[in-house]
Image (cartoon, rainbow, N blue to C red):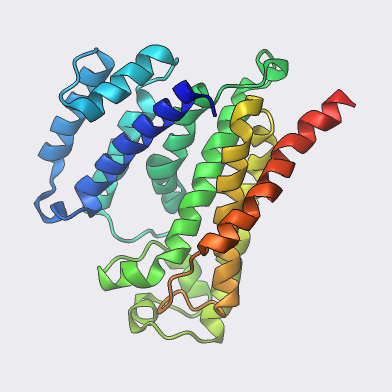
Length: 269
């Protein structure tokens, strides 16, 4: 990516990470809506050009250089509010909303920085933004499946309760952290869903500015690889954390580059 874009994506990432750590970080036990209200006021000051510290200043610089809207940032804070009061999701509709708040929003923040290929700047912008949201949904679903065991230790279950019941499972089975055939079948369905969202995001990723496609494709393929690792662990994401090792990550980069450039080469032909 260009230097300006790298700096801007870094600033967005830092803000998102700091926001997430309000709920999941070392001081999470002190978290309440008042803290999030103050964080939202600080966000508004960033967009008004009145940053509080150097990290805020980096985001202020970003929003002045790129046409970024404040709404997805506020929506992410709303996701943190949801995390405070909710640790169960009755169905996928509820879980989807949570995934949008905490991850789909990142796609909306990032597209103005990534840029859109000039060939598509007048016709399908909405589709590109929608694809960015879907990529965020796929990423968050993958996070949830990777972290089931760790979340259970914290008393949290980010899985649709009605779908657990369909496979004869419940929170008790999650907390017991024992893998059986019912769990494997349930996980196969959840992994299939996550892959669906990645597949839906592909077309939008190919319509980003050419300089931004490679990192987006690399991220998408590496997240997909986490799902592969869960399968290779025989669906044991209750006692094992699926991860992609450094060597596999490096080997994925040429493939990501090929996917990122194949579409533009096809258009040129």
